[in-house]
Length: 329
Image (cartoon, rainbow, N blue to C red; front, side, top):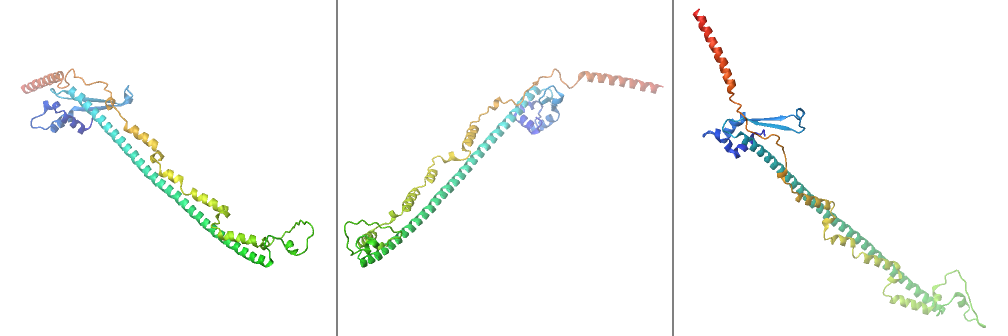
């Protein structure tokens, strides 16, 4: 209400209030300047010195005859209140819009961060599986080389044992003791049990058995079944063929649901976007005493002027009489 600019805007919108005192050659701004300098009085009453605990403002208007002073005060008060409501409404809408924009930007940022983290997690999972696959494949290759070398060594051992068995004439499986008794006469039935804590040489298996084993080893296509670890490696490789965790991350239909704080942010957005405040029901002020037409004009004070004229006339008359008396003497 104290603002010069606010008052000027009011009279620019309602020029009819200054029309009775506006000269033809004066603009509305010039007329307002003369009227404003001596008409409005705004007094803020200290709550400590008043019975009311809320701030009070007393607006008075001194105006010449012919102007609707009561209308000016009422419309000016309504104009200022409406301006404040509009300002508050605009500020609130700006605040809400800024808040919505901030939440949406935070959501976009969180989504981008989530997507980057998810891509990083998938890459780490796939890389980990790839390294494990390569290590298992290296182990599998090394085991097969080992099995192949073991088979070749066994074939060589068998060939050497076959050669010895041929020289000794051992065709069927035998033992050192039975070999020593070859050619000696046997009487009756004999059951022989031999106890020996030494390993019997391979050639005692006999030529036929040794050749059969060698033939089987040579014709063998794969040695994988002889090593249990190979089956375990094959099982682990099959399990690593598809990373279920990485697949689940890729197949997420609504990844935003996994964004931290997504639910709260969406709730805030819904609440802010559906925010509806009726500013027409917003009571910024309470008019304790509305403007009213004065019972009598404050200027000019006729009784005071008449009394002053009477006193001045009497004093002037006495002065004139005394002066004439003095000059007559």
